[in-house]
Length: 568
Image 1 (cartoon, rainbow, N blue to C red):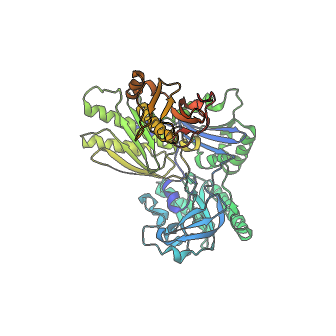
Image 2 (image 1 turned 90 degrees about the vertical axis):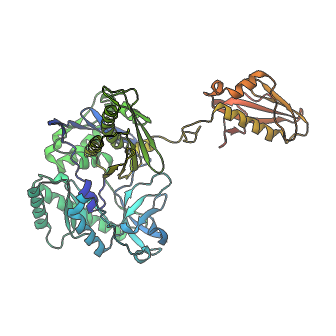
Image 3 (image 1 turned 90 degrees about the horizontal axis):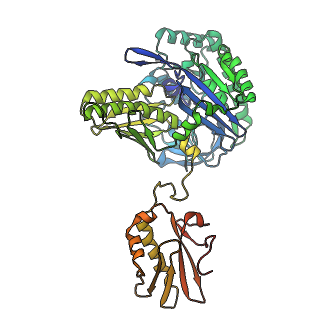
């Protein structure tokens, strides 16, 4: 988790993970652990609540995220029509910088002051007022210091901001601001006043800007003073790095995943942090002893023979998180589709018939779907625009209860979420802040067979495509009589060339195959062409995908299969 401004921190930072959830009039304590799995080139962190996986984060040596890193960049192109600019920060693709993310002294101070205590209202830290033209803020070739706030996703480069922020355990330093904000999740007014008084007294009038994170609730003055000193030292080092850095160089690097997890996720109600690497365990103990010594005894080295993720069932949960369908305990299920534009969640009753009537069935299924859907968003790290299609309910009170259940289930999510009212069609629109790619896009790649579509052409469609390919191929031969064999299929097909050429069936089996997709539904069929110049014949083979060595985008092989073609 990275903070990029006062509003972002005030709205969602300092998450309350160890909490008590209310069910009716009863309170249920949440038991939480962090599991850290380390292999030579990959580190994974899992958050488990009451034995159920809630979050999983991974970091690989080959593709480490850049969120939180600060770079000295150079503007390569200003785009007035987009109110944005592209900045070279030394990464593979240029970064995107919007006008709202450019820090200027006057606007930064005003925006941070407005956001410091109004974060709960859910406004934009940059404001929605009229922005000056990007051409007034930047010019081509200008050097600028920026921070990555969103990793490159798909074909889009990273998004950066000139509003810099450096977090510690209890505070977030905002170098361009001159104001103090308190996280909206600290609700006790006396505690807010205490924290504000300590920070103001310790920093003086000419201090940098700070946001007090939720982790600071109940923290001692010494702990806050330690964080202030630490952030001051870090910022001085960053300034020195900026002064001597070349364009494209990194001047501040975010912590590694295990340390970042402890800084952002660990709290006083956390039961254990289990680590299966002795080296990483030593680093975590050193970090916790320095920043939160009261929690140092909760770091535990796991040395068991069984993999730590297997022991807690995390590995199986990760595999299930890649599935499209999510079963519900009642017998219903969710269908989750992630597209380029948005993520959709469709709620279905499945085998759940209910005990009373259709309205009751829909209500009970939707309540369960609201809980499960919120968990899946967090587990799969789905962000952007999200549409949840609940089962239609006629009772307005039922609709309100389902919406409240969804909002309640999202309270434990570290990412900023905004939920809108349910539409008359039972649709709920919401957004979830996205900083990194989803779990599926980190672990998976598009299928080479269907190119990521998730569907294959029917057998009948493939058969007619075969015929069209044959008619194209036969035009190159001078002889009027041509023969074609469909190997591993049903028959041989022959025809005489005509205007236009079109094959005639040689037996009834071929005719049946053309009208019966069932016989080839499970085959991934492709065409392979070659010609026998001596016989002036064209031979066509229908082969299964595993026999094709090279295919083009149309599924047509231009090389013979391993077993060869009939003409060889």
